[in-house]
Length: 207
Image (cartoon, rainbow, N blue to C red; front, side, top):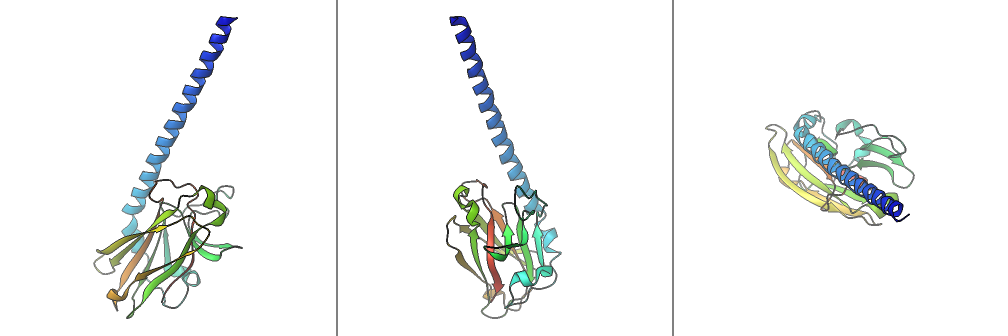
């Protein structure tokens, strides 16, 4: 009887070890895939930017000029995973209205020619239903010269996971009358955790 108990305990311990190892392998694989996806999006960034040739119009919400926007890394997704069946794009939701939706390893790119004193202004928030599992995300802002395709500047904004929408502004005044591309790349934040990082730009325009 004692030997049977020992055997059962050994089997339980072995099972726990197998489960732990499998979980570790899964986490490692997920991290590698995430990093690979990020690298792929970064590598194809300029190719995607070359598609955004029509300037977005100042004073008009981006969601009203979707044909002037390029979404990088856009994939179809099962409805049970993401309700809008895509990992990025312009989506319609009862709570947020028509908004720009981004997830880690996706990006929004557009061309523009700012006038004096203009800025890119937008309100950003993590979708309310997934805020409890999200630790926030990052939004990398890159600006390129449209003619030479050289990067002019880069900065990173941190989008907290909170109930309140945050307002952001990116000054474009130094690029007055210059043809530029702007790229907004969503990342998984400072903790490298993309769970629940559903970023909504509930308003976005050049003002």
